Every structure is written in structure tokens, then in C-alpha cells.
Length: 223
Image 1 (tube, one colour):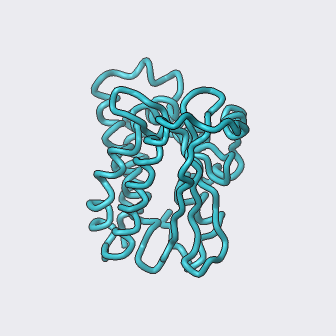
Image 2 (spheres, rainbow, N blue to C red):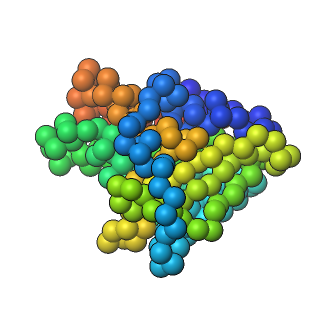
């Protein structure tokens, strides 16, 4: 599915592009719902959790402005995606318990395919004509299950509809990184991907899931 934004970035388009699956709007994670209820102010040193999101949005804005093709935008976005996301943690949770039984080679191929899929999804979503505007709350808030939540919005440059996009951040050896994305403050990317990935994994194993992701990547990068 190739996602094309109108000048007003709508919730339905964001759900299709950022969660990239027909089940995205219907798949609600009880854990994700719990993750959004915390209102406790984050400690001052947790403000560094905001930095990867700000850098990601700066890269998206630059790619949206100067990237004429999806491949050009993907090249521009890739370093910020690698810095902002803990892709292995997201993939592990998206696959579920079956991830533990995968061979090292299967995990390596899946992670490579998932990385390209994630980058291509953003490159497809934020075309020059999208003119999306990004805001990032300067303060994080505590996540009841651990880590911090960074609140952001994505909307049209004309001040039209905006969509809340919240990021679950976990602090590890590589610093603060994204471990889940909540669309409209409660729709979990991990939960949506678990439903989407599960079918491909059941039908074709790790190779089938990698092929599934590669196919989506090819669609996203086709201008």
C-alpha cells in the first residue's frame, strides 16, 4: 500500500502509513492503553529522551523538503531511524514468543528487512506535497510500565487537523530509543504489527515474513 498525504495529514492516512496494516485501527493493545494513562512529570535528566524524536522529525522535514524520490528520502531518513528506534526490540515484540525459536540467520534477515520497511514507510509518507508540520512536547512523562513517553503531533502546515503520535522510550546501552509508537495516543504499532506479522510468519515462517516486509518496502519506495 502506498500512502499519499493531502495537505491536511489525517488520522486515517497516518494509521495506514505509520502502522502499515489493515488491522491498525482495530487493534488496540491493553498494555498500550495502560501506557498512556501516566501523568507523572518525568525527571529532568529524562529530557534526553526527547532528542531522538526531535532528530527524527528534523530528518523527516528535510526529506520532505528536498527528497524528490522515495529512495532519496529513505537515504536521508535512515540515520535518524537507526538512532531513534530500537528496531530489534520492536521486531521481537511484534513477532512475539516465536522470535525466541528463530535461528540467528533468520533473526538477522528479519531485522534487515524490518529496518528497510520502517525507513521506506516514512519515506513514502512524507513526500514534498505532504507539507506535514511536527511538534514535540519539551517534557516527557513517566510510562507506568517503565521508560518515558514523548508526546508529539503531526498535522498540516495550514494549521488543520493534527494527530497525536506518542513514543514509548526506553533507556538502554545506546541511550533513549523508541520501543513502541502510539497513534492517537492509544493505538500500538507493536500490537498492530503483531497481528500483521503473525499471519505471514504462520504461512511462510521467518523467510515468509521477511519476504512480506520486502514486498511492502518495494511498494513504499515506488514513486
